[in-house]
Image 1 (cartoon, rainbow, N blue to C red):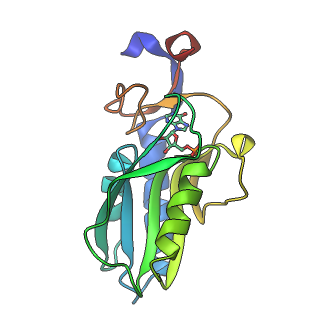
Image 2: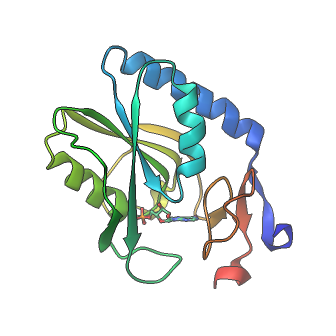
Length: 178
Ligand code: IMP
């Protein structure tokens, strides 16, 4: 796997520090609110597992799996719900936890869908943000790192289901996905 990588962009130590900062912020902002943190499968599963343990107030978790139609390295905005939430989110403070916001099409679809279910609030926490690629005006409420336009793998992020288990966020060699 390591031969397919240009370099480590964000090390596991930097990620840990940032996840702890995000956890502290969420703990402060949601004190007394019992937020529901929603993991968007599969990419955010590793970030999610670390983030929920960095939040020091009571919370609940749920999982949503979506798949986008179209080419594997880009999204088209057409999103299909593969696994829906287990419970109603009516009247809940919801935080959507994503691995990366790229064009914003996936997250826009998810946010609109969840808001239609009468949440009290719906915010977004993403580990990575690629603002230069945005096609829709959507800004995460909590962001770990803003990144340039590289294709990234590791710490949950994949290419064709590979590389999710790399501990750092790495830049994939362009010849692998082009
Ligand atoms: P968007 O709808 O274009 O914002 O795409 C978001 C989704 O595309 C993410 O949840 C990832 O699954 C995938 N994605 C976007 N950029 C990358 C990347 O650099 N590496 C791995 N997956 C990515």
